[in-house]
Amino acid sequence: MQGIAEPRTQSLLSRLPGSAGLLFLAMLPTTMLVPLQTEIMGKLSGTPREMALFTSIAMLGMVLLSPLAGYLSDRFRARRAFVVAFSLANACTFPLISLAPTLPILLVARFLEGGTAAFVIGTLMACAEDRERAEPQGRRGLAMGISGMMLGLGAALGMPIGGIIGRGNWHFAAYAASALMMGVAILAISLRDQVTQRERSNFTSILTLLQHPIALIPICFAFVDRFVAGFLVGPFTWRLRDEFGLDPAQAGRMLAYVMLPMVLGAIPAAVAARKLGAVRLVLVGSIIYAVFIGVSGTLQSAESVRLTLLIAGLGAGFLYSPSMVLAGRLAPDGLTATAMSLYVGIGSLGFLLGPLVGVEIRTFLDRSLQENQFAALSWTMGSAALIPTILLAVYWRRLRALE
Image (cartoon, rainbow, N blue to C red; front, side):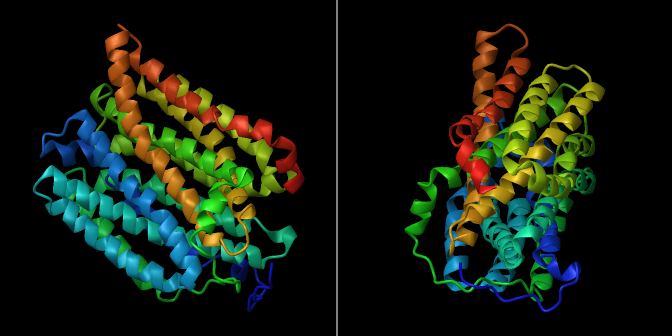
């Protein structure tokens, strides 16, 4: 790997990525409309499948455009320009969502929202990894730990904030999200993160990265983590609204119980990964996350569900940050933004499929079982978090050697 320019100062603040705060602000709008799905789709008489599609289609935009965003960012090294331009583009999508007169137009606007967000978030993640690689080996982990915390914190807080702002009128939340992204664009003008000085990569290198079994492991964990999260913001949230009678703000706060422990533990998990190994933390986190997501669907009171979601969030904290650290650490030279955007994009694919698959499994279970349909659904979705552990078992020694 060729050298990277040293930071101008060596203070603690100088070693933090300037993109971390922008990641927090950029992630808030991505989830602000989640607890308001019932109200948004209500005017269009949306069915459960259409509500799932509303949740998922924004992730489809991220899935399709994240690899392109990463490639272009690595190719042209235009980190700041990308963030500014696509933050403005993303800001324009929320008024389109608010004013959409028909379901097809609404879904197109959501797709554009996700696609433009992919460029913003993927590039900001690349900025954090640029700073990470500028540090000596012993200091690495801080930049990605903080960035991971800000990324998840924005997603977690966006839900209750959106529920509160849009409780009386969901359009207010859409326009607030637009204003936030305009703020990101303005603040990004002064973004100063280090860009590695390496040769430009070819687009075919994306396929090389996807074919690398070791590099696929953190990407696989990103998929299942977001897959289960998609279930939580889709069918699980609808259950909170319909069966438990929670309003948008209460439903948003309930989801925050699983998100906040995950993101607030990002830095401790990144530090612990140095001593215990990221692979071990990912394994433990997957088990805890899977078990308590399954348990949460069997409970019949909001208080007990809150507790199990909190424990599931603690498990997700062991999984979330270390898998992100592994994604950056295992990225080939010259493909930093590509690897991080694929991490975001494949994770978005999981988030896309989570609500859709959840609805279809629930429909099948309703026809096959006379009771405990949602309990069976939650255990099915929770168990998905254990699937990537097979890759850990196969490549355990090689991964441990890399740590």
